[in-house]
Length: 146
Image 1 (spheres, one colour):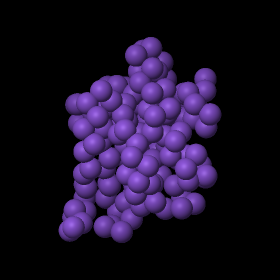
Image 2 (cartoon, rainbow, N blue to C red):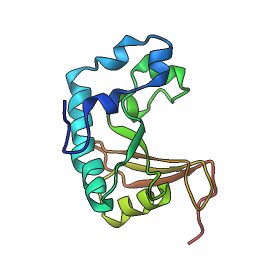
Image 3 (cartoon, rainbow, N blue to C red):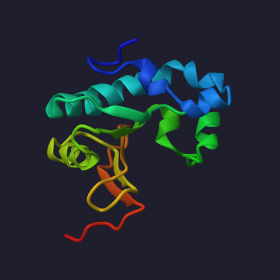
């Protein structure tokens, strides 16, 4: 099922952890989760993909509660609602993604530079949900000084 021009439901559900532990619920989410994933793709991921002109890799989209627990995710993770994705872009670098989301003024809830180095996140977490906090966080690296 296509969620947007460049993103499918299958890639937003994929989880090596769920496959390893035979967590079948991971691959059959409720309709509300699918609706949330579609909104995330349409409002954040697709405009980002169009702007950068190269593919994004989804390293983690939806996580069922069991999958989320197995990967050590927090119990309140937006991944469990289908409202978040961890993304990477080997062709351009992850810092480009992080900066472009802000530059495009996309309506994110949270944008997180996760681990890596201050100059290059290991991955970028971005969420889209009803709060639209526009919260920018840094995990595993110091927040840059202004």
